[in-house]
Length: 456
Image 1 (cartoon, rainbow, N blue to C red):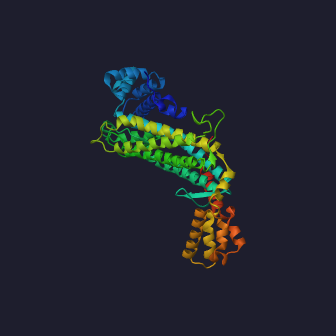
Image 2 (cartoon, rainbow, N blue to C red):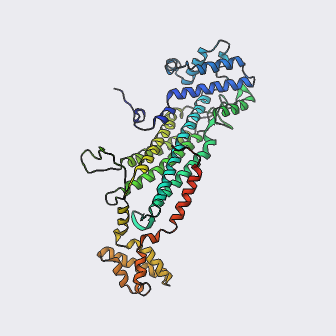
Image 3 (cartoon, helix red, strand yellow):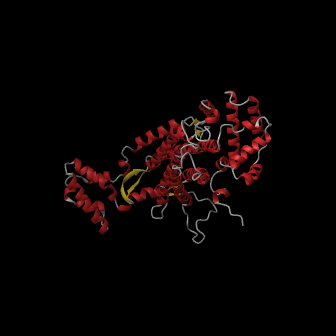
């Protein structure tokens, strides 16, 4: 029976991202590397120009297929050697000695990895910019909507509901900037041969690598063994996992706010959708839960990438097999998570009435911070004000007596605050602080950064 993993079945990841890590695409990249190296070597008089032209024609003709390579690999059990043999088989006799000249397998493997990552990051950064812009829009829309701010799962104070989106939006902007900054370290071209000396090409090896890097839109590695340092891949996967963790944070907040007892938001539930096979009333936050689930998996791969850093001498193969999994898988999973997060936020139902009702869930005790502040302004010591309000608040909670009435009956409070003073404190919109300014500043930063980026 044929077993297909979820990532292979198309359940996770967009077609656009999956195509980047398609086996044929990997081969096309490696063929592109071979032709770029040969063309550059000919320019520097390291190989005959006619040989470079022949190699370029073979690569451009696309006559090398996966089936041909698989057939060759059954004999030699080496995928890169199969590619080189396939090219040589289609080249003229006097060209064959110059195929793959001065290169080693990982020159192709590592550089083609970089090309895939390069293309993948274009998609990821576009989605990050789209998501950040969407979050900024939501932040602006709800910046004047007061809501419950919770710490330790408890009501703490008043927050602007839009501030949640601004927090998330700015972090997505920072992710975009982190990725942009690390490209020079992770989009690496390496063509320095067997142990990183460029031995067959001599001092010209450095120029070859520099010129090939420019052709492939990559950065030349300054020094390497047979492989590029695996710290580079760890940094890449760390960046993906970091974005995934922020998406997890957002998803957990949505899941919590969708609890029946809170009910402030809800994932869009389309007509005909089933929440539970047994309970007809269920509307589960399954998309947010999917993001949390995939984020757990994504973070796990970071450990594997760290394990790959320490290799024997100039290289061994203990990293090779798992990298065939972790690099594409991590990228495809984050792509899926970003795609899902954008849909969630774009279509999310926000229950303004429930948000406002939840403010009064504690009978006004959420305003205790502001009552204490008014007493301090009147000259009451902070400790005295704190203990007085704490005692009244706990009494109100335990006895279920009206909080405002208890406040007004207290001598310390009644001697310092009038009924109008107290009533003004219990107006949520009076306690949004600098939220509007903070949100506007964040939104300007996001809009400025992504003004010239096509996020459709």
